[in-house]
Length: 190
Image: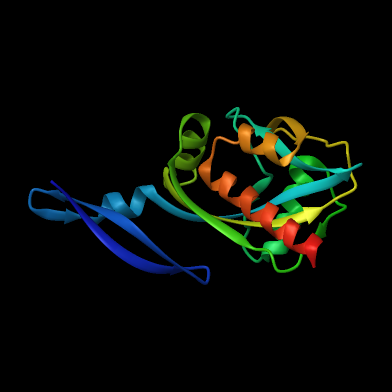
């Protein structure tokens, strides 16, 4: 039998409500399953844009999963969000020239199950294979055109806002780019 419990928890200064599955095995609550296989993780990402004549172009990277998204990665112990952002952007793109826009910070929350090599790696590290992710995004401008992709990525592309919306398959990332567009328009009009 499966019992669902809804609870709220503070997670890195944000209150998140999530469902928790508790398995009843032989009439007893099985918290072991919950504790062993579920991980709560935080990532920091960046929507990077550059001006090209009269257009604004946004950077997407293609991950090994073939999915296009913004550069992002896990926050390491002791890092600030900005340190994580700069480290991850540099690791994935080689870009160091970033002007982070003030007053923009958006989060998306999602749940996924690790598969393939990621699943094997997580099991070997005693990490959960069911991941609840809090991804925090910032926006930054660069003058860099050429990107140096790392081993995590297959390709990169600079696209207009409309092209980015069409390319992104993740609804959370589409929400982020929509918020970025509003912020950039507001900044331009002020």
